[in-house]
Length: 147
Image (cartoon, rainbow, N blue to C red; front, side, top):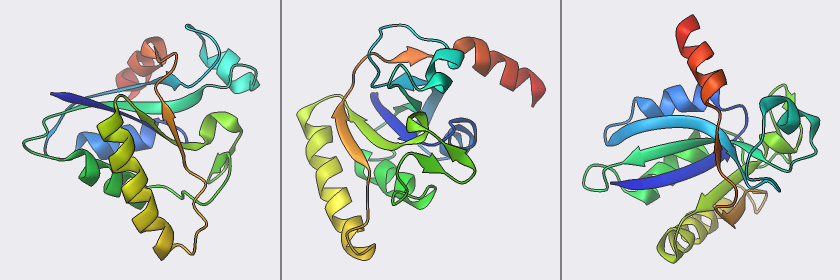
């Protein structure tokens, strides 16, 4: 099993979309890329932590490749809007790929290059090494209870 961590705006809808893909074993919402090892929803929304809202995916690479996950990532959000998705604005809603190893970084760069050509070089998606991932378990549990 492998892990992918992706920021593409508010994490709830992307989590649902990713969970429906064959090969995705588990999804989790959280925050990544910020200055602190631990954070809360309120702190992230204040813009003071530099965390992005993310979806963490556990996947079976025999069933779905990292590249195909990234292709889907670019299909389900707008990678050309800086720090926003739809009605949500703020640095926590940025488009960002958090890689766990050099292979993921290389694949991310190749996919962005390909997609960027189609989008007239307007992609603002960051590629960053995973830093200070924090699960948003308390919010995730409340959300699941409302479904």
